[in-house]
Image (cartoon, rainbow, N blue to C red; front, side, top):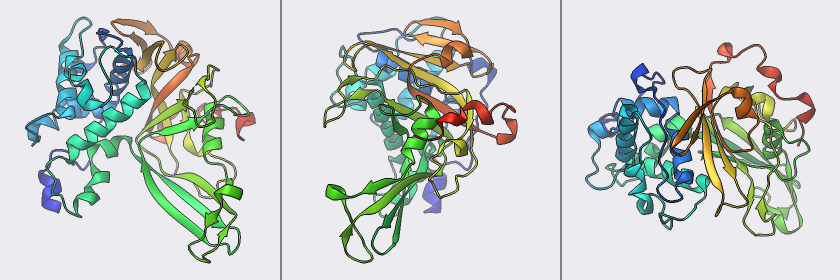
Length: 359
């Protein structure tokens, strides 16, 4: 098993975030038929430092065993086109494979950028796992790929039986957090995170079958972030898709900070200590319009070599922006990078208002 990991192109002991200065150019992507959803996702992903380092150093393609379609190789090809470009280009390595990346998506249709992001991350993960033996050992590799090293964290779900007090715990990986924003007491990212981790009573039609006392009873469920990811991807649920929830788009502004400590952002009822983790904003994906089937997507990205500089990437157009402008946006997807808490500015801890600590 160790031999398979050592020889496979997607497993490494450490991931570098250092990007050569020659790869720091920011160019736009041409819209080739309602592809703003795709362009904005690519801009965000290509400005994730550890992923950029992997693409820059060709860590995947150098040993890729895949003879047919490989999304990781496609993204790597696109990245090297970008760093050589002097003007906007067509992201053809990805566009031409749209139906393979996202079954059901068709070029010319406006699609949801979050759904496309999930397809891309899943596709990169599949590229990582190609060539591994189909055995029970392969399952152990799933959470050790470069994709998981970059984007994955773990959520702990705790259910406490209301009859016997038995506590059941499960641990599951996550690649992004989808946060409800429709009924927050305060429209902040901190409040949305607190709402995500608050206790939930399971009763009436949603009672819990206790594995210990074998009774169907009322119980209390709570989620907590067990292992913070290196890249924290946050999806703000602005769209309703039936099932009794609000239809259309939630257009209100949800404030988010440039830097924050994750421990400051969980529900006060969460009893499990959160591992200290500090995060700095990398990029913001924005949607304007009434629904996922119409409107427009664009992204704000932090310059990979000059972290104080921000740019708005709107299809072919790339214009200089500012942190102030970024923080005013009605974000749809947020990308944060985990950083050393000692490198955080002294003002980072109170970046969320204390009045929004409860959801």
